[in-house]
Length: 394
Ligand SMILES: NC(=O)C1=CN([C@@H]2O[C@H](COP(=O)(O)OP(=O)(O)OC[C@H]3O[C@@H](n4cnc5c(N)ncnc54)[C@H](OP(=O)(O)O)[C@@H]3O)[C@@H](O)[C@H]2O)C=CC1
Ligand SMILES: O=C(CO)COP(=O)(O)O
Image (tube, rainbow, N blue to C red):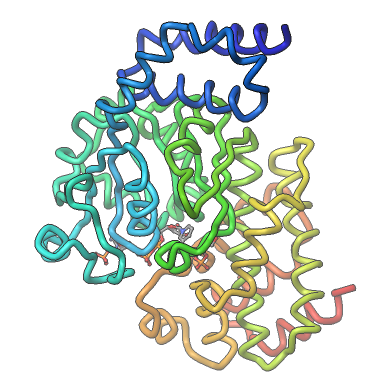
């Protein structure tokens, strides 16, 4: 009886949406509901539903109608997400800014600039360099360029181009010119309703996805059904994705962990050891909690993998751009030379300034983030700043 009621409620909720959905989104939504039912209930309980006529229809739709998605960005994370999505019934338009990269992918099936070992399935993935063409006929827009370049990447795109689409931010950074989360910025600039916005989070480096190492993603949206749909698109042989509702907590936490990874890198570059870093990271977790709870109060468990897990992987992994950038700064590189040394973007560099400015209003005690800000923006000495942090750690 419980199941009957739950399925009924979900189907009624979902049918309210029917008028505004395209067939592929409907299919995904139905599949998500059914997948959850199959996971959570016994075959015996589910048996009556096997006569439900939609089952056959869904099966046929699954064969025929792929989800239509646009990937915006040609970097390592976009390339890794393309690999994951290509495992499922998804048809992808991939926007990159460089004509030469697009031509190379069309010809050889590899991104020449990032994760070049990843084989691109060119039957499922169509590459283009005109953003308006990339948006046409898509149900989902995935944003996967560093936050500082989203506005450039979407140049020429207007609110009407987003109408009826879902937006998924795979970005772990803030729009520097507005000090805004990417999802808030998209909502305001393009009038996309919050129920159609999701973020992809969780501890997951593109390089490990390229190697098909088992990974976990958390998809957050104010509308959990939307998050579940996106999770269904990303679940595959080597990725397990789960939908949740704490979009603000998860997005801010992802921004903050990049700043902490910079601090870990800086101290590593200065010669501090693992004992110190463990204490730095535990204190940093409390700092993240204070900030996220102040800016968006909600009951949340920060030991979850989208919060603590992502902090750990970014603070310790040699693949982390933020940790690498911090290490170079700790070793005495200037900001410009550290940026030139890396072929990739460390989001924490931009984020620490935004968080510093936002925190003028909230006045949360964040000595580690403040030390990183002083080093990167006030030309403070890394040695002296980290001496100060050292005295405050417990
Ligand atoms: N890499 C990872 O493992 C993960 C990354 N993320 C997040 O994904 C987002 C993207 O990062 P990632 O893919 O790693 O970045 P990369 O550093 O790998 O790639 C940067 C991308 O930005 C593009 N770019 C640079 N300048 C501009 C510009 N002015 N206008 C438009 N595009 C530009 C680059 O294009 P070009 O090559 O033409 O210069 C390239 O496609 C970040 O927010 C990151 O935090 C999240 C989880 C994992
Ligand atoms: O968010 C990430 C892993 O989950 C990527 O972090 P970096 O940008 O520091 O590599």
